[in-house]
Length: 290
Image (cartoon, rainbow, N blue to C red; front, top):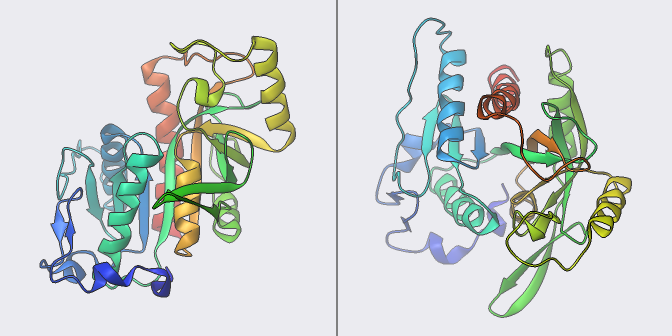
């Protein structure tokens, strides 16, 4: 993380309140979080809790006990866990919730004097020409219009930031997971849609459509030909934020559906959990072993 890119205003506050996380700079944040090397972000409370439980089980080599890790900080907006050298945080759904979380996590790490954190984001996604159960490692995030840029409106002005994921981190991750059993890992671009339905060119939302099924398929084909392999709602904000602060970041998507075939997530809840856990375990194994 490039400290020179951080906002000096918050650094000079008498007390910096990280309101949504439930911490503030009057606490000994360096003692609490100074050893953090990795931040693992995911969408839901349940997914963050799942990652934390699996991480603790793996790190402490616990096999026959059901582990339930406690959260720290506030619980109503995000679930936060601290295990070993990693901060595990749910960021909510969509880029706005994610960006609130990322701002306060970055400030938390500055107060804790963490120098070189690496950020992973792991979550479910819709694949594109990719079967359910496969894993997509992002090369870059693109907008709905397939542009590799994060558009941020600040004080009424539009600013654009690059959205590439860290190629070195992604390469190391893919290499480390090459020996994983029952797992197919590919890389590709990720569309960070500004919504789940029309924002991802689905046909099954509530609002009237401005496109036909044929046009939808043409759009998906164009995206595929440009290297897109999955859709989510957070990748564009995640990559854009991390690039601004020069934080090495990597996104891992667990594919639940091939969007060429259907818009509906038709697999069972248990299958969804299984696919997510597969992606989460790859990240956990990497963080612990590499």
